[in-house]
Image 1 (cartoon, helix red, strand yellow):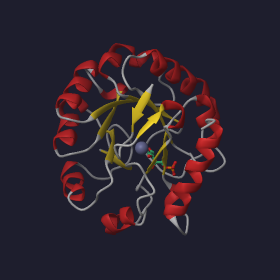
Image 2 (cartoon, rainbow, N blue to C red):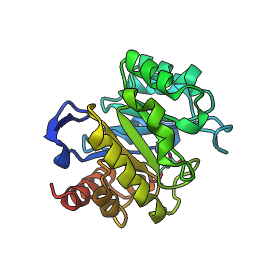
Image 3 (cartoon, helix red, strand yellow):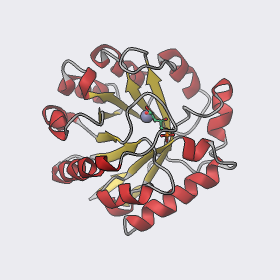
Image 4 (cartoon, protein in one colour):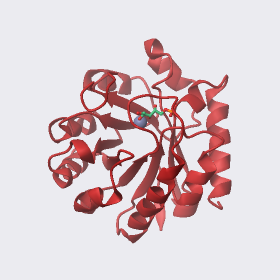
Length: 236
Ligand code: DX5
Ligand code: ZN
């Protein structure tokens, strides 16, 4: 199977490693500058939208994402940790995000949310908190482009990777392989140079990394290092 990444490059799936740095722990007062520090090393920039209801933290919403998109050229991977994605998720696609991921736990009609995101022009992702079994995504699968397996409890950066999520990453990989769509598997939370290889070995191909990138002296170099580790673990 051939996949296309966020920059329009085509790969066979097994070399389709993509890195999506999260700016949650970057300098939030200067986001476009922080994203430019990636220097073209990243496939996506991961934007964590939190509403202080679905998760106990508050970040930013649609107006900031829309404004930011006018100043950056890396595609946006929006991770919505918000209630009522049925109402809000398509708007992120409408303002130009390349990928919009909502939490299955928050959605009333997950299949319809995914269809609405696609209809608005983005790839549709579905996310699972650590306590949510993989079966929760089945209903929405016909309209899903990416499964996000959370490897920490959503809400904060800098937490420790939950190794016990790896079996769920393998289950997500099996669903993606069985799909007719170009479905990706993403991991998010505690992904760094010590944990990324296990994730790649379990079948993830899209890696969110927050503190591992933005707490490094050189974020671009940190991305390249993570990519090399993931590619070698995936046998690329
Ligand atoms: C957590 C967020 C993550 C977070 C990852 O709820 O969804 O994207 O920024 O940060 P690290 O890589 O530091 O765990
Ligand atoms: Zn995230």
